[in-house]
Amino acid sequence: MPEQRSEWTFKGSPLNRTIADEVLKPKPLRGSHLEDILTRNNQKIDELRRRIPSFTCIVGCSDCCGPVTASSEEMARLPVRTQAEHDVALAELSCPHLGSHGCEVYNERPLICRLFGTTPRLLCPN
Ligand code: SF4
Image (cartoon, rainbow, N blue to C red; front, side, top):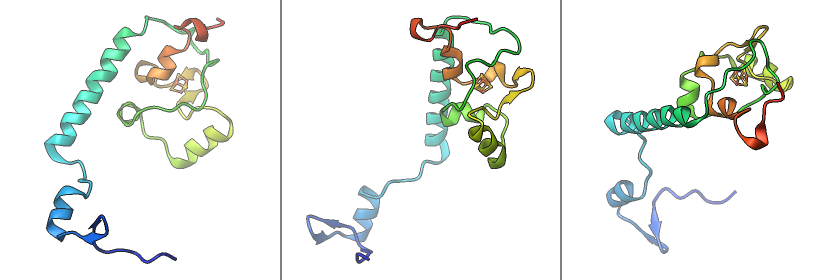
């Protein structure tokens, strides 16, 4: 096992701990800086939603549903599902927000779900 270094180095020379901590160590996002980023990302999501052509799915249709990836900000808009619910959905190549009557989070569904059916290469067959 390689030796773990406790000090930052620059070109092999030890750096002053305070300077290294200030300059090199990634800072956790917190406070107003984090809120600024979240606000900007949420505004971007809203802007992208507006740019996607309006499209209303047939109620109950889930042809395009499956495991989807979404940003943290989009996930934060959805009800929390347990890890077990995510695992079951993934094992069935489904989505934890898909219910017996279709998408249970339709108004807040992620961008990838909104795009399906709106682009020439992803046309809705229904
Ligand atoms: S979020 Fe809704 S539309 Fe998107 S995959 Fe899940 S159930 Fe389908």
